[in-house]
Image (tube, rainbow, N blue to C red; front, top):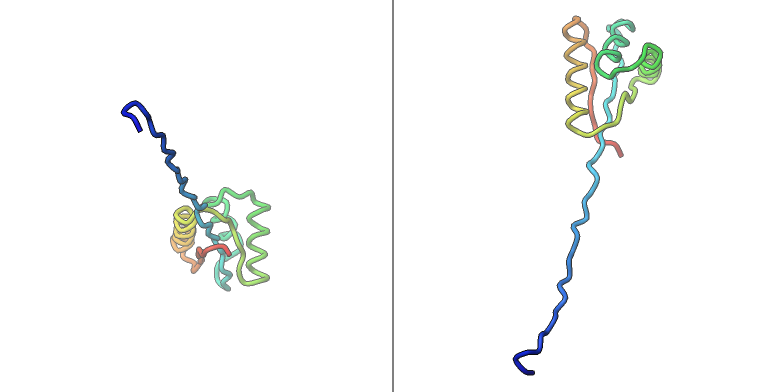
Length: 103
């Protein structure tokens, strides 16, 4: 090889494969003490549901024991669940919302 020859080498570029963030469910847990009106009011205030949608979610939890309210990112789900539970406690009722990973 002479001094003027240029050797070109290709570099392989690897793109990191990004995973989508895991989604979490906010779940309304039924109890025998919280009035239906309070549950619907909390669903409307925290989750921006209409009266009819809030009533359906509440009735699903009433009949089945639990109901999925919303599916979203982890930090949002945990914040919404805590905010809704705290709002129920402020009203003096044992209203409970939990968050868990979606399968």
